[in-house]
Length: 243
Length: 243
DNA sequence: CTGCGGTGTTGCAGAATTCGCAACGATGCA
DNA sequence: TGCATCGTTGCGAATTCTGCAACACCGCAG
Image (cartoon, rainbow over all chains, first blue to last red; front, side, top):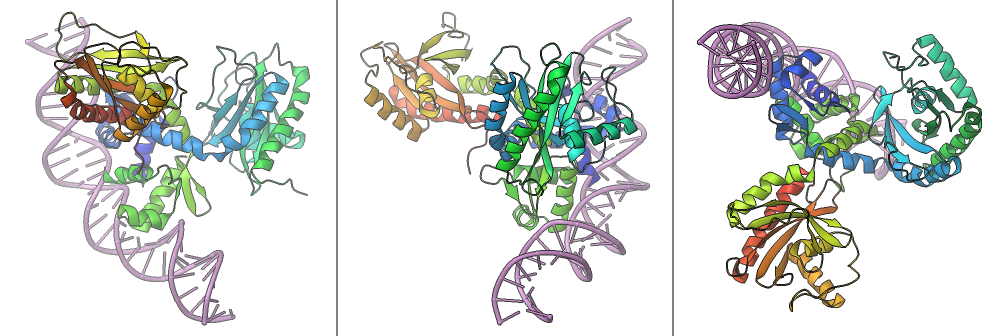
């Protein structure tokens, strides 16, 4: 099924900051021939997954439809919202719910403490697993393998596999993950795992805020709040903590 | 590229009321062998486009990400312009695209059939919801409450809330709204709703013209053209009519 | 407990699809 | 005008996919 896989690889090439692509550009990037990419894009266009804008291609309406359907299908969001709102109110910070999407952590729901304008909405965006609190929680409690590459995003990002493994062990024993300027300078965060009825880790709840407000000294306490909220969500999904 | 096309056909099989699918079930539906469907689903799963839930498959997180990305790139005006131009050409009248703005209908895009001088451009102007075709379409298909005050703009304006409610019911069953001298004497119009990927009514498309040219007898036919054009725009936004 | 009907998955060999090349038309730039 | 780039398209070789059949698994009924 490598032909279908290549079509999906094309879709995967889209990202924030990559809203449209060219044929040769993609061909070089994915290691395919431009003729192949051209034909694949034509197929994707016929199905409405991409649309052409002159010589470039952007994501199409069918994806908007499927995306809306997918988000709704993540019953997670519905089960989590009330707990996240309470958590946001108690901490006064931004709360996010993330699931694993391949080698990235995808934010599927965000709740802000106050409805400040200018607070970036991370919904629909994906970030590196090893550099986010949510990602580390997903790695520590999920059964998925470590990412292949550990990119250095700030001086404090963990880029060594051994150190990451040790960190995940710490996360497991603490019950929550802490991230101090590992994704962005000046950004702190904590995150706790959410389990479904079968006991597997399906998501993570994070609280994040600027370093000057969400100080390091507060992180343990906020972490516990986070754990409580995540446990609340887990309970709504039918999870009962192991004896 | 029929292999890739089949993978996309699988995605296309998802719908409201079709949140998860089985292998054999899909195979029968798409006329493929279950072995083929099984392999395609495995490929889709590896890329995160679908996820398995026991023996069934649901849309996956990667689609939520791509969908959010796609929605951001799909603008109302961009999706609407081509359809509106065709509508203007076919009807020979002025076409407007309006969105709800509080208790008014705000025109965001206008296309004229011929470039007559002296045709007023309504772009950027807002009008009463209850006295315009676009406004009535937005009220009938949107989830917004009725305006507080129903000002009488002409002798034919609907100013009674009960009568307005009945009128909106008529609009819903017809699929389009008709306005005969309710906004201005000598002005006729029809309008149809536009839906986004989430299925909510986000805009309306209207055709308007002077009573002596856009006669009442023509309104039903023009209304149908309007509905078709609006459906076209909806499709470009990722809306698919309910099965 | 055994057989049946229902899942979904996987090896294999033949068959059909796809790939890469090269050439083409179009467009942009010097 | 010439050169570069872009994306598209025919064609034959070569890879990939299909469909079959067998398999493992589950629930259920006899």
